[in-house]
Length: 506
Image 1: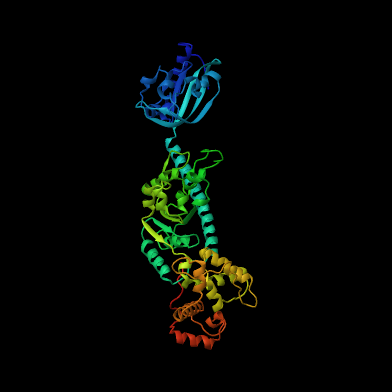
Image 2: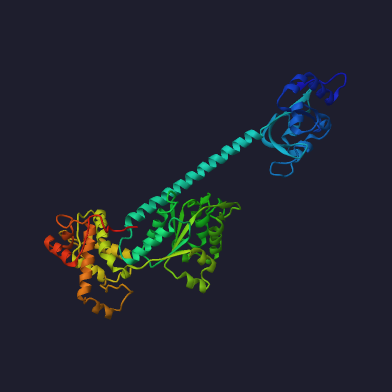
């Protein structure tokens, strides 16, 4: 835009006055704010839309430094020096400046987002000021911000779903290999009762037991019977996490929080929001982190590493340990308040050597799984095989039994497995006995022998679904004639209906 110097009045003020007079209709009708500044940055005119948006009357602004009135501060709160102002730059470099996402301030001190264009004004080739056209873009910016936040939330949920799927796939693999806990002993019945009692609640559970006793499977049973079953069960193996990564693993971290933090990361607590977090080997958590763990258990609040924002989660915690946490707390190696917070509902799992009645049924179940996994065809356990398995002390619990069965399936010949035990030990329902006692335990009383036979036959009947004769029947599994088995069933007074006394599995 160029104007000619007013011959009557002359000077920049006359030029701006003529602009205002000649464009009065446009200035009044325009929805955008429009004002002029001279080469000294002082206001020369202001249109009605600018008055409404800024809260100032034109007479309050004309003749005053416009930058110090409405454009003095950056959006981040820092001072906006007038030498950096693109509005003033227009009458200094002669270029049109278009700027988005800056702030103007109203008379009452409030601010709003604007975009504006500052166009230089010349009089006979001399820069005499600029005309500024601006609009309030707060609503558009709010809409953009909401859209950006929505995209971030979709991205966050997408990443969370991706991680959940990865954990669930891992869980499927774990479950597919472990086969569950099976049995009908008093110990298993007690565990099932405890699971049924605590599952519908949100109580924190502490599962104690030796390695291989099925702590994770009990945790899954609790989760599956809870109101959180439609959300994932997230497992954390506390014994496998390096000490310096515990906090990031539990609570996540922000990008740049430490060397190697190349992007934001969701922690396990956030991933388990609405579901269940299973802390396996909880006794391995560093003492320095236990206070933060206690806080999230009590308040459901935490912060990611390197981030000040407090996040809220709704997570049920099930912990497991093979250590004596109470003893650790007495020695100062585990926070006592955290121990009591975890030990709301304790479940103690009995090792396999103390529930030998379950061994034949477990062995049959594991053998079917091994045949499927190894594609060996159908294999069977004899009564002698079951007796040998029941007499072993099983220091490795169910995992060791599973390995023995898989090895037996690999060594099988002509449909018969070969039980290869590393060191045959005595059956023991009250704990491990000495080797000397083991020699005597192989001698059974008549009642003990009858009870052993009854248990073994019941296991075969359950495995075959009550079928005695034919392929896959109990007689074939026990490697006896069907008529012989029928006679033993009658002698031992066994009553078995198809579908009754079915194996219990968790």
